[in-house]
Picture 1 (tube, rainbow, N blue to C red):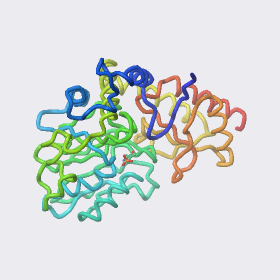
Picture 2: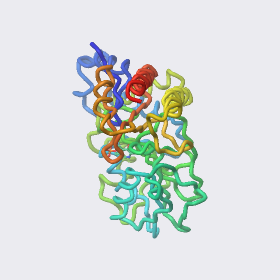
Picture 3: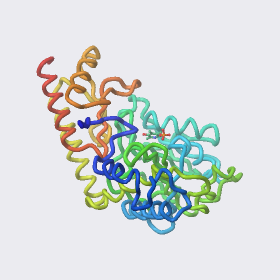
Length: 360
Ligand SMILES: *Cc1c(COP(=O)(O)O)cnc(C)c1O
C-alpha cells in the first residue's frame, strides 16, 4: 500500500507508526476484547488511557504545578468564545494581536462577548509579519492578552514570547503546539485543536492556570465554564475518547524520540530545506518577513497562477497531496508538521526544482 506525503494544513498527516499501532489495537485493545472506540469513558481501561495521555502531555510541555490540562471538544473556535466568557472577570477590555486569518476570527468572536482592543495588527502589510512588541498598544487594565503563535494560513510564526507582566497571556497554539519547547509558565492559558499537530479532529487541548478557572462573571453556563471541566477532569460529558487515545500514542512517540527539543531540531531541519531552496530561486515567492517565517506552514507562489494546476498535478503524480494554498492567499502551502518526514520535504524540493527548470 502506498502512502502519500500529505501536506494538508489540517486535519493533517499522522505518524505512520502510530496509525499502525492503532490498526493493530483496533479490534482488541490490550486484551480487553474491544476497540477503544467502544469503551465506556468511565471504565478503568479508558481511564488509564486518559490519565497516561494527560501525564505524557504534561511531561512533553513541561506543564508546571498549578495548571490544569483539559481535553475538550468544539475546536479552537469554541475557545475563541470560552476565553472571553471565562477570563474577562469584570475587567473592561481584552487585548488581541492581529496577525492574520485566525487572529481575526478570534477577535471577531471575542468582540461579540467583550470589549476588544486590537493592540497591534499586521493588516497594513497583508499579514506577512509579526508586529514587534515595541509597537503594541497594550491596555493598562486588560483582562488578558491574546496572540496566535502560528498563523496557519499566512505562514507567519512568533519566534519570541510576548512580555505582558502580570496580565494573563493567552495563546492560540493550534498549529504549532508540540513543534518546539514552550514556556507554559509565561502563559495564563494555551489552547489548540488537535487536528494540526497532535491527532485526530474532535479533541481540543486547553492548558489553564488555576487562578483563571471559575472566575467568569457572570458565571458561564456549565458546558462553557472551565470550572466544570476542571472539576470533572474532562469527563463532565463524554469526551472524544478515540481522539484522546490516538493523541496519547502521539505523545508517547514524541517522548520516546527525545521530547520537544528534538522535535524542534527535526522541524528546523525540514523548514530550512524548503526556505533555503525558496531563497535560492526567483521562480517561487514567499511574502513573509524572514524573521517571522513559519516552520509549520510554508506558503509559496509560482510566477503565474496559470501554472498552479500543472504544479499540483505533477506533485500528485509524485505522491504529494494537499499543496494547494488557502483561497485567501492563493499559490501553494506546504504544511510540514511533526508527522511530515524529511523525505516528504526533499521530494517536494526536488519537484519544485524540476518544475522551475522546465518552466523558468
Ligand atoms: C485550524 C485553526 C483554528 C480553528 O480550529 P478548529 O478546531 O477548526 O476550530 C484556530 N486557530 C488556528 C491557529 C488554526 O490553525
